[in-house]
Image 1 (cartoon, helix red, strand yellow):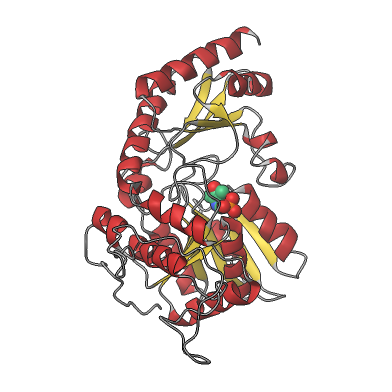
Image 2: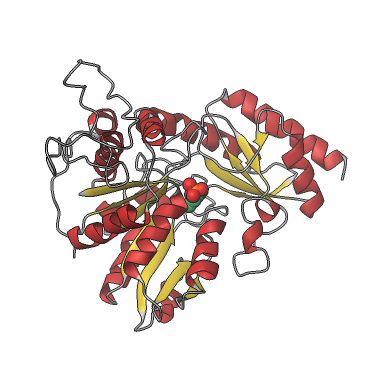
Length: 394
Ligand SMILES: *Cc1c(COP(=O)(O)O)cnc(C)c1O
């Protein structure tokens, strides 16, 4: 359904693209790193005489362009668009695709804010939705109606690390004339590239692994279809939720190390998952790299590694889970994920508090870990001591 255009550095290997796509040195000075164009407006050589197409920073800024080219090259898409947050990107996409009376099918374990946007913002504007288990293709098929415009896939999902089959789901969606959207925030394009598996649009919270250093909020869309790209670019301009120059620059900087970071994130998380699997204080480990994970085979086929996110369900319920989340020392208690530093989050009262009481409510004995780039042994020791103290004070 989509037209493929060649993107800059599109044929280079991933690690090379991450460093070079859109990142040409500054022609005027030779600066190896493209500068931050911290300017809201651009001089015109006579009315309408734009230099390089830039007129006002909401329509375009060279630093944002550098990021958008890099994003497109990373996901293997024709068009990259950078927004002020992941949710701003999602909002622009949804407004480009759905109208009152339309319908969205969405997975039953997605980022809480995504569900809030669909349920409480678009719901108010007359867009209906159905929540489904994306692992159950028949249920997905049944949920699709004539008014369905969009299938929202998040894999691995937040926070229960459910894995769904991107190729199968997009094929099913396309059979019904439905747009297949994949939130690729957890895997990042270093590990998983949904467009290559058939998806129409990739969504990112660049706040997470792409930025990678917990110092920027941002979002992105990458897609191939020229018509849809024009619609979302119009909304980016007309509604204005753009990535600002400093944020765009920080994100390009983060992306350059994405490939090596994802290797270490995956290695540390894999080791921690194995340590926790079989730990007496842990009921379930949710990590797609474990062969016991129900989505392991699919993850192994569509991801090159298993990433840095894992969740656990602890023995002893809410009290032990809360104590554990408060007893870690290296893992800092905070929302968000994907940064160099390890973070612990208690979803049901933190990131996913907004979906309490809905079909997406997260069990109260679940704790989510964003495994950072610190020493792997020290991370394991930290989790071990926190579990011991959490259990003791039961
Ligand atoms: C954080 C997150 C979002 C929202 O992104 P923001 O940058 O916080 O607006 C969307 N999807 C997933 C999977 C996320 O983790």
